[in-house]
Image (tube, rainbow, N blue to C red; front, side):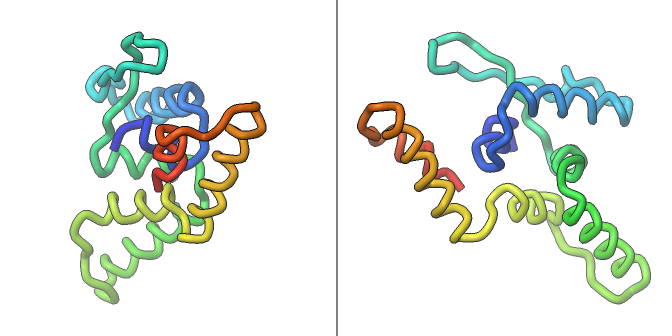
Length: 135
């Protein structure tokens, strides 16, 4: 998952998320350069983003959600003690739950984003609606 997707889904500003990713990767002695990617921003410039695989994605996302972090600890304890079976791709499952929210939360987020566009004095375009609808 890229930092652009995480920012869009979680409401965290991308520049703040980039800083958090660098800090969290440095904390576990990983070079952020290893995960660097780029995208073309709205002004047509090439800009930095990170593409984080499973465990690194989970490491970064749990940095700002204590409930998720505790749920993972409980799950791993259950697996280690034999109460639960390992779940394939668990990092992406938990990450998806964190950034996607419930259906109602996504609907409210969509309405809020469209309202921001309209409050700025312009009509929401198909592009605005598509961006606002990202889970």
